[in-house]
Each structure stands twice: as structure tokens, then as C-alpha cells.
Image (tube, rainbow, N blue to C red; front, side, top):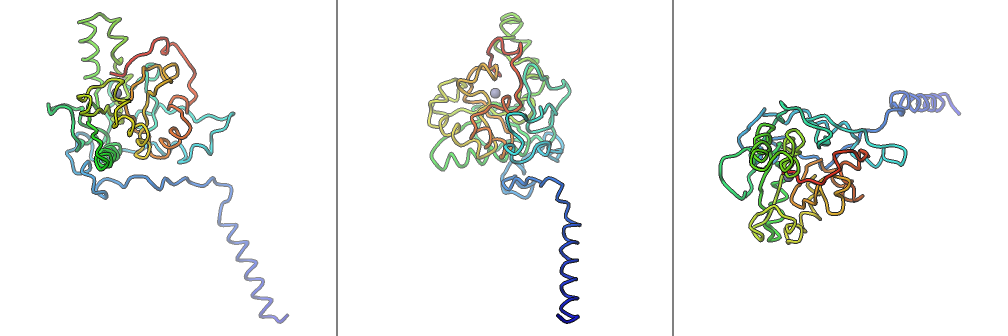
Length: 285
Ligand SMILES: [Zn+2]
């Protein structure tokens, strides 16, 4: 072996050692969500071009709180840490975990889909990330001759309180407590939830939506757009809510896929134990 060959071998060995030195193998790999929607303005979706009700930015998405593939950290001894950060797209909101009275999501945009009414309202708005995906969902359904209508999206704390107080005044507090969402407990305040229906049943929010062509398509496909049917059939004891085939909640593409494939609700993902909020099943209206 001559001197040149020896030098080449030494350089190669040093190179390999150097590579491993620079690459920190102890760090966990970042999970990339390849289906993550493009930032506003980079996608043709009309939601991004619509008027802005809040800040022009989508706000820091707390999607990063969890890895893209939740199954990597889910095993019988480990649960996903409970997310109660209001602006996080995976936030858990219910009667036990209320949103602050002054929480208004950033980046609300008006959806460019058909609604059941045209009266001016905040209900046509969703956070931009969810809005883009819902518009895609409605467009794709339409291509299959399935009509999906928006009924109610964003609902502010103030509006929820007005609805609750009105019901309490008309029917008593007990009735309101049973049939209305307590202010701060509605997912609609996150700007990530949308109630949908279809002309086939006159765009009403009833269980029968689940048996329509649109309802069945939504149940099977909404995860592809980052949504879940948040209060599914047979899960009332867990969710604390009656079956609501119309209530779609955006949780992001990877989480929606994970929940759909494993037949889990958001609450089960966090393994939140049963508590007094589940004594009676309610509607998130
Ligand atoms: Zn709803």
C-alpha cells in the first residue's frame, strides 16, 4: 500500500467520523406533514382572497405541539398530552375545558361555499386553514354530484352567550343548559368547527343528515381534508354530546386521518376521563 492510498483511506475514515459528529442522532426526527396546506396566498382557494375578519395572518398554529404521526407516541402507557391552548388546531373544548371569554381566533376568513341563508353573520367564517380545506371538501363533493351546504361556522363568545341567555329567558335555565352550549364551551368559538347539511333535507341540522348521500360522503371523506365528525354515533358517553353527523371539526390532516382510522374521538386521543360534564348528553348548538 503506497502513501497516497493510505492518505485517501485516512481522509475517508475522518470524513465518516466527521459526518456522524455533525449529525445529532440523539435528536428525534421532525415529522413533516406533506399534505399541510400552503400558506395563504400560495393556494388558489378563494378563502385566502376573501375579506379578513381578524388578523391577516393565520396566527401561530400550535399543530407543532404534536408530531405529525401521533401513532409514534401513542402506546398503552403513553397518551397525547392534553391540548387546551385556545389557538391550537387540536385544542379540546367542552364544558370542562372552556375557552376564555375574550378569545377571538386570528385569521378568520369568509368561506366561499353555499350557505343555508345569506343574512349577514359571523357564521360564514372559519380560520383560514380550515376554510381552505372545507372549500376543497365542498368542491370535491360537488364533482360527485353531492351538495354540501354550510349552516354555522364561527360563533363568538358574545353570540353564544346571547343564544344561551335568550333560551334561558324563554324556557328556563335548565332547558338552556341542556339544549344550548354554555358560552366558552362551544367548538364554534375556535373558528375550526362548521355545521353542514344538504338541500336533500332542507339544510336542517338533524340526525337524518347522517343517512343522506352528503352525510355518508362527509363521514367517509372529511378526514382527507383535516376534519372529523366530532360527535359520532355511539360515542355520546365519551363525548358528552348527542350524535351530530353535521358538526365537523378541523384538527389538521394527520390527526384527522389518525382519529378516523382508529375510530377515536378527539377526547379519546387525549384520554380525558369521564367527568361530571358527561352526566347528560347535549347538543353543541
Ligand atoms: Zn356544531
